[in-house]
Image (spheres, rainbow, N blue to C red):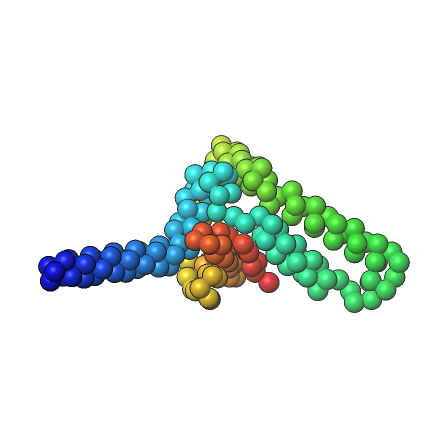
Amino acid sequence: MRDAGTTTGQRARAWGVLLAILLVALVAYVAAGPYLAVRAIRVALQANDANALADNVDFPELRASLKAQLEDRLARRIDPELPSSLLGSVGLSMASGVIDGAVDAMVTPPGLGALMQGRVLWSRFDGAIGSRVKGRPPLQDLRYRYESPSRFTATTRTASGAPVVLVLTRHGLRWRLSDLQLPR
């Protein structure tokens, strides 16, 4: 009888150890997730692979964020008295519609593909005329930060030094780019 009890205790302990190992592995995977997602985005950009990039982007959230930022930027740059006139409010409405349409067209998998193809064509043209300036690879020198268990940022700088913040959010176990905070 004593041997059966010892065997049962050993099995319970083994299951407990296995469960602890699985839990640690799951936590490690979730913690490494945003770093893996940023790496996948970087590789997709370098390879001009729109499909791989699209796998790591939450398009509805990214579109909403970019629209809000661009409309805010437009509102800050116009004369405060412009919206009070009929012509000014019509112009502002049209400009807002153009922003919405442009963001809707560009922040899609086919839109990203077109942007990447345009970049490839431009670099070929630019290289053909001999004035190509080699820039640094995309998303280099990032500064990473967890803001919460489901929000992660990676900050880079433009050539002029202005910060661009990539915001990744967690949906289940998967991290995706959901916001791109443009320099002001």
